[in-house]
Image (cartoon, rainbow, N blue to C red; front, side, top):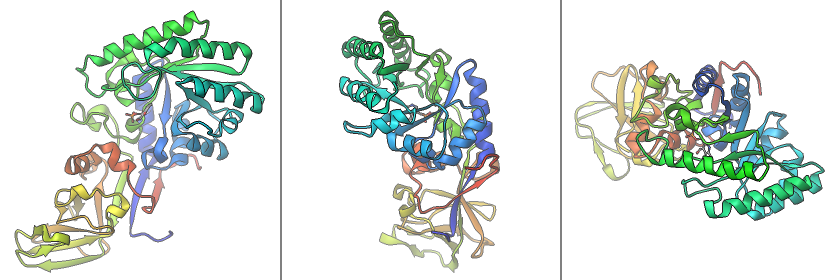
Amino acid sequence: MSYYPARAVVDHAAIRANVERLRAVAGRAEVMAVVKADAYGHGLLPVARTALAAGATWLGVAQLGEALGLRAAGVTEPLLTWIYAPGAPLTDAVAAGIDVSAAAPWALEELAAAAVRAGRPARVHLKADTGMGRGGARPEAWDGLVDHAARLAAEGTLDVVGVWSHLARGDEPEASTTAEQVAAFRAALAVVSRAGLHPAVRHLAASSGTLFHPETHFDLVRPGIALYGLSPAPDVASPVDLGLRAAMRLEADVILTKDVPVGTRVGYGHTYATPEAGRLALLPLGYGDGIPRHAGSTGPVQLAGRRARIAGRVSMDQIVVDLGPGADVAPGDVAVLFGDARDGVPTAEDWAAAAGTIGYEIVTRLGTRVPRTHVSQEVTP
Ligand SMILES: Cc1ncc(COP(=O)(O)O)c(C=O)c1O
């Protein structure tokens, strides 16, 4: 779709600054830019290129298909993927030099078979479940998985490049489970070295570990949300506190204004009535664009120098904003739903609070029909 009266402006200068900040925090550890889910809604390829140019040395994506897409676009840097099912196109992944996570015997076997077909060893990161209870092999399965990988490595079909895990409560600096997970990770690493394997990268930290827990840095950190300038724990530290800049600014053009009397009922279900006479503005974004319907009557909008709220329900394609009395707003003016706090606009975290969710979801759920406008790019995709 070429014309759309709304846009997500993605600021690559902010992404570069955030990568630089994360590199400084990570110290000796390398930075893997996590660009899964279309770079959290910001645009996979442009963000990947900018993050690499800014000093990230690895990329991480959840879906194998996203990894294959990056390689098809000519991205050659180290690249890890961790979500695939039996029967996935692992031969393509191995042939493309994509690093693949493995947490179960079936995955090792499929990777080894893919390596034979591709004519080169599969680059594998063994994943331990150190307490997240999601991906990864549990401790009782770990020794068997490591022995299995060591046998395949000896045969020449696997190259165990990494060992990794993920924190469940890294965003809660006081949670004792992070120390428990670090200890469990160290125990898992000891099993790996006893098996004669010496992976180049051991990694545990996402954004919260990177920013709040230096003891989780190991050889590589895997920040996602912080790259985009949002805080992994806004109650603990805001993006400004963390030295991060929001990379996405969601704008919409005003398409209609109307002056209404007090008590004017607005939208489906008449859940809102104007508390005083004033001006309403209609904006062309709705839940069909990923605006959370839960943010009805609460979602904040910056327009004509004032902070207004959604009036009533979020429709599929539109929202109404109540500007109150005296607003000098006309069709064509630009409203900002969220962006960087330093610009005096609401943030994705504000929207998350309004909708009962997290900033991650606000940016990631933004629909594909909203155009992304990339600004301040130094490398072209
Ligand atoms: C395994 C893994 N590593 C790293 C990340 C990046 O996390 P964050 O966005 O909190 O930095 C994620 C995202 O959920 C993940 O699943």
